[in-house]
Image (cartoon, rainbow, N blue to C red; front, side):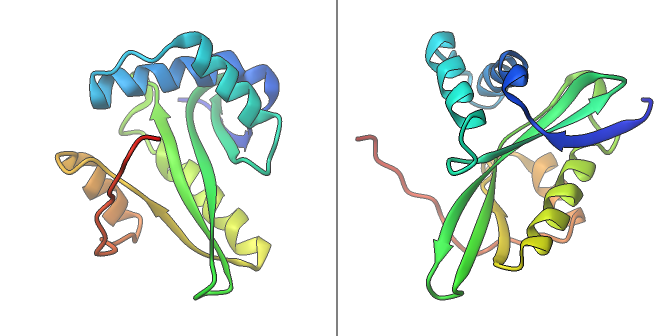
Length: 151
């Protein structure tokens, strides 16, 4: 791996981000996403930072990892909770510190905003590798379960 850089994703990253999201869905949930809907959603997200922020990791101009940050306002904390989502690292770059660099970049950016109170993510119950990675970054289990209903 060469000189890894982390930056905000741009609209011209949409195809790559959508490709990585599709790969993640297959890997984590054995789910094939509708590519047209996915690309439309990624383009919408990249066009409006009010929806989310996307960050990408680049190695010699090649996007090798990504994460999306969504926002939740906490009245209890009078500030924002940033949620990591759509985390993906290309298989050739895993276990090489790419996610750590993305995480640390987001953590610095959140701290610099002054009104972000916490970083959170959810992880599949069976994903022991992910859990060890997150613990190694100083994260801990928050004691919550995620419940869901489609509307």
